[in-house]
Image (cartoon, rainbow, N blue to C red; front, side, top):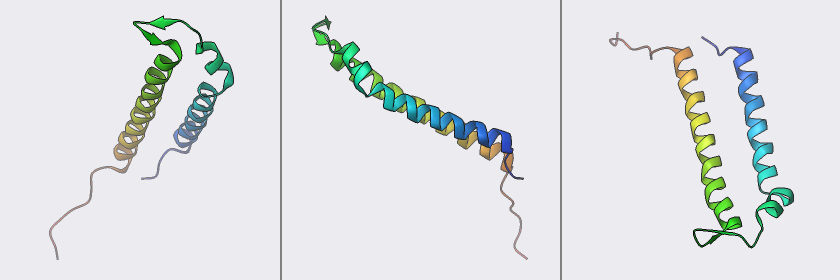
Length: 85
């Protein structure tokens, strides 16, 4: 079976949204917001932003990829196997 075209379109749109969000998070406005002299538990706020934001974005991409793999496996069905002729 082929994949549902509407679902495929939604996944493509989600990838574009994740990409744009990642670019925005690593550009001037957000970097400037977190570039303060404030420290949290002795760590500068900008460093915490990078050390929390970057792994979080990797986790989101990982979970999204897993969801994509699971839904494509569900739609293709079990592998066809049988006895050799």
